[in-house]
Length: 320
Image (tube, rainbow, N blue to C red; front, side, top):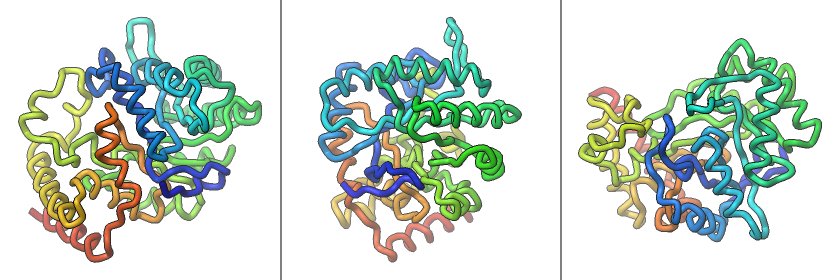
């Protein structure tokens, strides 16, 4: 699988990485619904067998459960993939989720993730959300301290704006940024991605298929039947009038994909990877079959004409 350098680090990552949100399972606010536990570890193994060399998770996913599943999956694996995780989202004994960038909280979170992952060092440790905003400097100072102490190899940010990245960079370098980016989530194109490219900050995007919306498998009926805890119920892209517009876009992706024997989801991911600022894309998998269906995206390239064709469709839909 093709690999790219992640910013100024010595991490050379595959263009696709395993997203471990869904395997955190259900039962917590922010989940992607119930997960068949028997599928989780085989899905990770399938991704690694196909050349993915990094896994992205967070302490929040399953309230620690995703990290525990990853630890079990990697026992005895050689070579081991890079493991990226995140801090800042915290929860209490009743599962109520909050945000903290206080130094002592980040240190506790790091120690807890190290235990759950059963590792001595985290390859990339990321601030999940820049909240509370007023504590960014305190949080990033502690992240840099963890790096200096060898608890983590590299430090990155997720969901940060350019101004927030600049505040962090005044304290210590940022290895990577993790923003949402897809055909229907393009806000970072205007300022954030150009800034990351200029500063040589690696970019690992999440939700390149917009939380499953662009896979080609989503329907209005399926959206209407989302589980009550499914966070996608609250996303504007899954509500009218955007939902109908987005599903029309999927049919255009399906037509392009048919020329190459590819799915709409593969076309959607390939479109994000065509952006020169993007290092890699996080793709969430629930089972080995999903891995098999999308792993070939890594060697799929859209032609300049196809990229222009998609651009025309986006402009037409925006004007509709």
